[in-house]
Length: 45
Image (cartoon, rainbow, N blue to C red; front, side, top):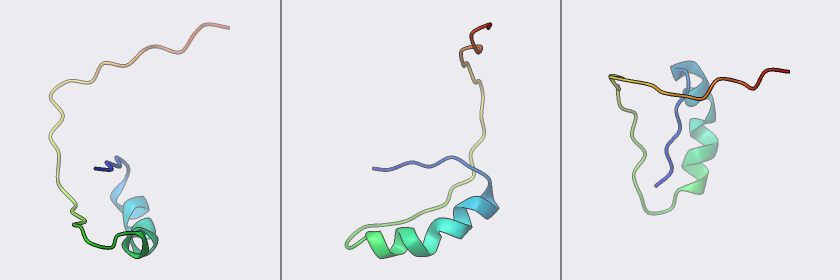
């Protein structure tokens, strides 16, 4: 499985290329509700 998270317009821009890569398989676009996001803060310089 490959998962890509980005803005809809950017995802739609790569769909033709992605479609050419997928033989047997499924390409889906799903709406996501984020409950929490925890990332690391950039290191201070």
